[in-house]
Image (cartoon, rainbow, N blue to C red):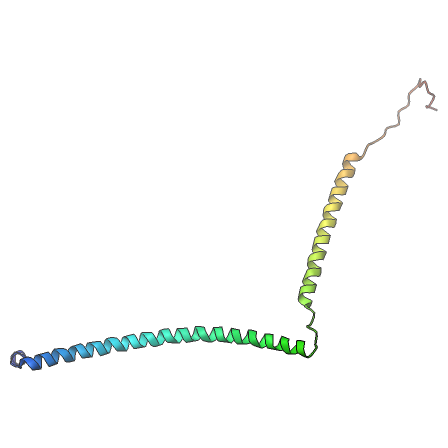
Length: 130
């Protein structure tokens, strides 16, 4: 009760100053939260940018090495992985084609196979029987 009567007895400028102080404290607290949030967002953006810069630097280093080798007259190395993979794919296609051809050939022979039967005819006019 004593505190409420004391607050009521303050002058109008003191009450306005107190309200202004409360608003300032609230704004400062809100700004602090915003700064922390912005700092987190900025940190995330910086991480993403450093990844981009790192990958761009790696690509630039690779291209510079290739350009230096070309200027020095060195030929680029053969792409062995590409050559080996192409050979393996070719072998697989050849094996599949050979298997399919053998299967198709064996199926045709079974259809074209004709069995001849020797029959004795007693009175053959041509005289082929014996």
